Length: 247
Image (cartoon, rainbow, N blue to C red; front, side, top):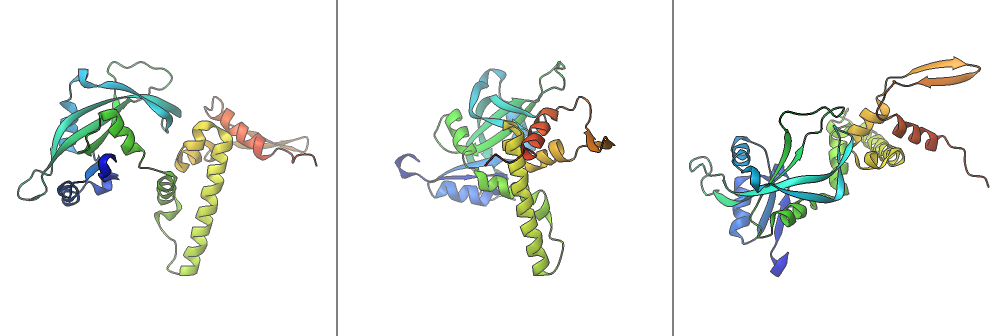
């Protein structure tokens, strides 16, 4: 960062008083995802409605629940002192800025809302950058490898099935193969699925109730009516089963 100052960026697993206080004492900047615990929620609730400013994502972000790409959100900041309990958190008290991004929870079928409901993402930081820049810097910490780890830890690598090394090695190989196939399937299905988590890919494209029938020596696959991802699934199916190119 500017003037050679170190910026430490991390997710909520590193929202630890001793660590953040030591980073601040060393003269570095920190940018840590703040878990939405009661004090954080109270600080967010105290932000005035006029403080929220619109932002636009440089790269659309997939929303798994609505199966849409989010391009807009709102951002605000407030001062915040963390780890202020003198008995349980002695020497850890740290004052910084709480930068909060909120996105409206999408409705189903265009149904209206009496009150807009938001999802919040908070970042605790002491960097001097404006909120939009600081929030963008924090989001840029995550790369492809973090998504791979998150996908695998939420599926096959949540546990290993055996006490034998060879069996677990085979399990790991199968997990990696499955992950790569899912990622390839997502790229073939749609731009949204190309960036979606593998759990979303399984829900949208694989765990699908269907019925097979035979007619005139052909197998027919009957998929659910009004299925929202039918076009994406059909694109994947057509591409995967296309005949090889002519020599």
